[in-house]
Amino acid sequence: MRWSSILTLFLVSGCLLFPCEAQITGSKPKPTIQTPVLPVLEDGPHLFHRKDGSVTAKWVHAGKIVEKRFAAGKPIELPEFEALLGKSLKLAKHTPPASTWPMPKKLFIISDVEGEYDAMFRFLKANGVVDKNGKWAFGKGHFVCVGDMVDRGQKVTETLWMLYRLSRESLAAGGRLHYVLGNHEVMIMAGDVRYMAPKYKRVAALFGIPPRGIVGADTEIGRWMRAQNSLTRVGDYLFVHAGVSPPLAPGKVDLAGLNVAIRSVLGTPPLEIQDKTLQAIAWGTQGPLWYRGYFKEWSLSFGPTPTSDQMDAILKNLGAKTIVIGHTKVAQVTAIYDKRRVLAIDVPWTDAKKVRGLLVQGDRIDVVDVNGKRTEFK
Image (cartoon, rainbow, N blue to C red; front, side):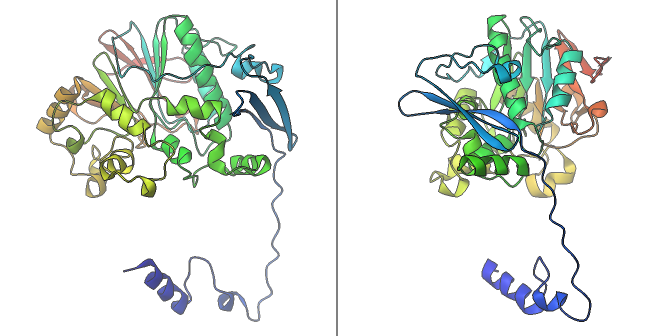
């Protein structure tokens, strides 16, 4: 049935998604509608690249826009945001990282922070990834974020800048931060902002740009995000936001090729992607950003759930022993298949006491909490 026909039926029956005027008129007095008082807007910074090579920093303070212009090649120095950006930020072109990495001595993993910056800061500090000032303290270790760092929360800007800065500080220390993209990063870059906190839509309106412009291709954060991977293998661990379905891995998987393919359509709405294969990889239910087929309760929509033999084949084709995913909510870190073949770690960040991450050292996997407590995962 066409959408127009469905809408006509709703209108005729008087049951549109919101009440029709005929339903709210009559003898009863109309209720008084109180306009909610919006909090004073504070957000930033946002760095916009200009065609002449200069950069304009914009932020919102007390509900008003503040701007500062930096000439081409000049470092970005914003004392108001030193905790996020560092004392002096020298911008450079973002080169996509490799898709495979050797196993470090220690590997720390979280997912689906969704703008809960304060909880993330506390969690990383308690587990020795950052120090009390939020600076990298994990040495040559690797830190993996398995997607969906954005949307929903009130401190997405702070979350992204902290990860951006840590990616640089980790490199200087001989370590690495891997930002694996999730479906929500891809959504906001393409203009699907239905889960974006209203705060950021207000910020965009003040700036005179569409909400997607907050992470547009002309922004520093947007450029950095567009250079990231959607699948990354570190040692025997494959990190992907949603999962790898059987159709995506019928043979040996070219991780670098998949990452290049997805990066080529970042920022493009799905219906504007002409190549249907690319559209399916980046936006389809069997794609690595959306798949939920490992969970039996989702098998009708995303399945069928891979058999044990299919799972072994997927891992072999990925060159991995374990797939670590976010995307689908779980009450606790969960092994979906035996032998740790799939680990689901998307424990919601809205209650910091319940959040969990992983710390891998050698053959040992520990589940860690916001207080730094470690419990071996068996």
